[in-house]
Length: 343
Image (cartoon, rainbow, N blue to C red):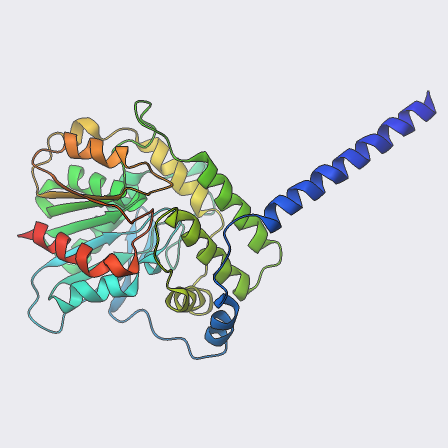
């Protein structure tokens, strides 16, 4: 009996080792291939001075006893109005492409961005399980920032989860909202009548997270973000800005609080807690622009198409060569389209 048990344990141990090896092979030898020049570019960035990414007036507001960081970038010319921008899931304010912010400022608009709860320089919620937040709470943080800056009304621009927070803001604060732009987002992410978030994309992101987190370093953190962008680009065909992305990531690591590993889980929960916005969006009375990429591998374009059907008088743009990301080459065109919706 004892020998049978030992034999069984040996077989079980071998099986476990084989499964573990298989998982390691899956993680380390599959997934997106980074461009050949990635290592040299990252090395050069790490050994060079980091450019400044926070160029405007920054500060903090207190909302629900949480400290929230924001930045306000004002144009050098006449101020044509404020644009409040909302970033995607688990990202902080620096997730925005710098040329996206610069494009609005160059055209005379004040740009306001902020770190969600649990990200960047805002408070990371230590007792989150007992004090979870919703998308509405994230939108309240934005309202507190507007009050601090004494801005009565603003244009709203949100990407992915940020599009959902922007929708929430517009619904709850119609008197403070001038226009809404929802980019690759959804009015109800768990709508059973629509295709759900791609499980294969989520799996690929998890694999990349494990691959580049086992041996933590500045270089691997940068590679993780580059890999995530390649995964979210999907089948779209355009180059990732390796140097600019690497500089932004390194700036976050060295000059800010880095990246909260729990942010993604917390923001997922905030999304699910918030439910459907369909009935409220049907009564939205501000100019609305909906943008989505036909090659989005994460949030299917059907979600934005349903938004276009629901929101009265909304305009929509579907880009053929766009995944779940803002392609660098499309930034000028997208910014112009958003500003057209202002007028």
